[in-house]
Each structure stands twice: as structure tokens, then as C-alpha cells.
Image 1: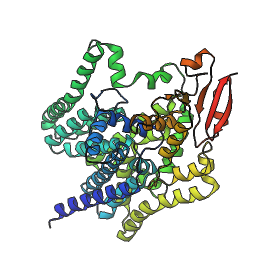
Image 2 (image 1 turned 90 degrees about the vertical axis):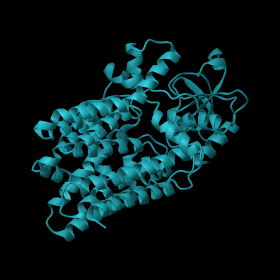
Image 3 (image 1 turned 135 degrees about the vertical axis):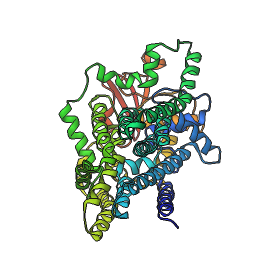
Image 4 (image 1 turned 120 degrees about the horizontal axis):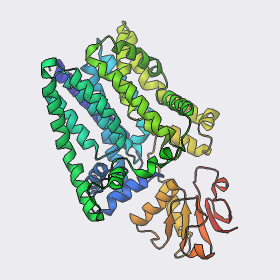
Length: 484
């Protein structure tokens, strides 16, 4: 087998093995949080929506997998496992083409990304970030290849256009990658590369444009309506906190970024990435990595400054594939082949060991002060095999409610309740409102009657009750509430 074919086979093998491993460790059904929304959206059917938090591409792919037999929630997990495995394989392939002295450098990049906690945990639960990681890796690979081939520039444009169908965190990274792709091409070919890039972007954006036009027609709003386009492109509610000035200080956000990056890259990667960034300056062909890493780092800080963002550190996701590639550059600086292999092994082994130590010591509780002991262990060790607690819990809570009850629930816990209603058909007579801030959910409760409050199962339940509400606990986490 030729060296090039051998490298491709190795990257494909890594992708397949990791996809199977993530699927084996993945949740069998619905989990708390956004997972229920993704699964329920896929199960409901109907037209796809182009909004920033609708994720039409993920919804479409999930429906296709669910049609083969798995439950909608399990279908999302299988999609995430496959996307993450493929993303790691792409990172390995990119690192292999960057002229490293040793295959250990490419393996170090793949290992760094594969066991980064945010990436790993997104691969074993129903989440949107696994597909985002895949888009980022494809875009970086196409940008680097575009410096030599105009067809790769077209592929970068295609990835950019299709990226509109998924998470918007990809978009701020694309202009930097596009500039690196065009500027890195020979002078006489830059116009050709730019044209290929623009053409690919137009073709890739066609499905999104069709969804935008169809949704505007359904809503009866003009296609050029500013408020509608803002909601489609960035999501007005998610940016409301920033517009209103309700944002965390920049210094606090930077410390937050540093804290979770250290958690994600526990081990040699913390030192290898800066070392690789310094080495990139001496390698003309990979300057785009440094530019993209700098741009993505700035982008990551902006959402964290917004007071209402609940996803927290997962907005660092676009940065992780770039840091993994920089780790490969850092390993390549080391002259000894034995040391390179040892570093690659440490990149794979150290983070899981760190997560295990945090899970069994009081350090984990200090990292996650709002979580109880079981939730801390579950968060720190991303293994969801057989984890059916959310569905069992939601079924029990719904069974304990009287007919027609009105319920306030925290976002994550409420998602599990709504999943059981919309997908499993359990207690559809119960009205679930996913908000704990209001004094009552409305309806009959607004007239002075009682209602029910469901607090998160992993936090201090009594402290999460709405202000001005008197409540009697019916069962753990379920309260009968009345105006106080």
C-alpha cells in the first residue's frame, strides 16, 4: 500500500473505531437539557425551520437515522458519535499532511481532540456541538488544502454555505479561513481561488436560502424583514443580554475560558499547543492555523460575556480542533521519536485520568458547586451507557400529577418532561412551562389557584423555587405551589 493510501486508511480506521466507541458509551435515550428538544423536533416531523437554534441539518439527519429503527433520542446520539469520530479522523488526516517528521504528531492531534471533555461528552449525549466540530475540521482542512488547489477553495465555500444549516458558532471563523485560503495561494491564482470559494459558498447556501424563503412565506413576513433575518441568522433572544448590556466583565470571561480550556486540555496539550503556535510562525503553509486560532479565541469570549447564556464552556468547541492541530505542531518540534510517541500517548491517557481523579475526589465538587455528588461524577465521566434516569424520572413525575395540572420546570428538566409527552405520549394533558422565574405559569393558576413546580434533579431543589411562592414537596423535586 502506498504511503498516501496507508495514511488515509489509518485516518478512516481512527474515525470508525471512535464512532463505534462513542456509540457504545452513548446514552440509550433522552437526557436532560437540549437533548430532549433535538429528539422531539426530529420526532414531530413537519417542515424544517432555518432559525439559529433550529439546526435543520441535524434534524434532517436524525430523522433519517430514526427511520432505521432507533428512538429519536438514540438517533441523535448515534449521529453525534459518527460526527465526532469523523471529525477526529479528519484532524488526523490534516495533521498527517502538514509535513510532520513522525506519525506520532498526527496521533497526538487526534487523541487531544478525541478525549477533550467537551468533545467527548457531546459525542455520547444528544447535542449540537458534535456536528459543529465536524464542520470546523472540514473547514480548516479545506482552507489549508486551498492554498494549493482551487477545488479545495470551492469545498471551503461549500462547507461555509452548508454551515448555515447548523450552529452559528462556525460563521465567525469562516472569514479568517477564507482569507488564509486565498492569500496562501500563488499570486497568479488568487482570483481563481476566490471565485471558486464564492461559487462553492453560493451552492452550499442554496438549501438554507430555500428554507428562509419557505419560512417567510409560512409566517407571512417579507423576505427582507430585518427582524426576521436577525432571528434567522443569529437568534434575537440569545443576543438580547449583550444588547441590553447585561454581560459579564471581559476579565471574568477570560478567566472562565482559561479554566475550561485547562479542563478540556488537561495534560501535555496545555504546553504543546503554545509550542506549536510558536512553530507555526516558521511554517508558511500552516499560517492559517494561527490566524484561525486567534480569531476563534476572540469569538469564544463574546458569548461568555452574555449574561443569559446557559451553554457556558461548550462555546469553546470551535477552538478545540485548532488547538489539537497546534498540539501536532508542538509534538513535531521534539526531536526524539521515542519522546514524540510518549507525548502522543500522554495526550490520549492524561485527560481521562484527570476526569476520573476529579470525579472521585472533592475537587470535582469544587469545580461544579451547584451539582450533587452523583451529578458531578456523571458530568466528569462522560459514560452514558445504560443511563435511562431522565426518562424514568420524567415518567414518574408526570404520573404523580393530577389531570390537567400546570407545571413550571427548569429548562433541562422540563425538556425531559416534554420529550415523554411528545415522543412517548405520556400524560399529554399536563401543561409544562419551561421557566422558573415567573410567579405562576398562567391559566388556572393565574386566577389564584395552585400549580406545580419541578426543580432540577441535580441542584439544591429548595433554593431553585420561584420567589414569592409557597410550596409543599409532593415528591423529591416536585412541589405543589401557591401564591404567597
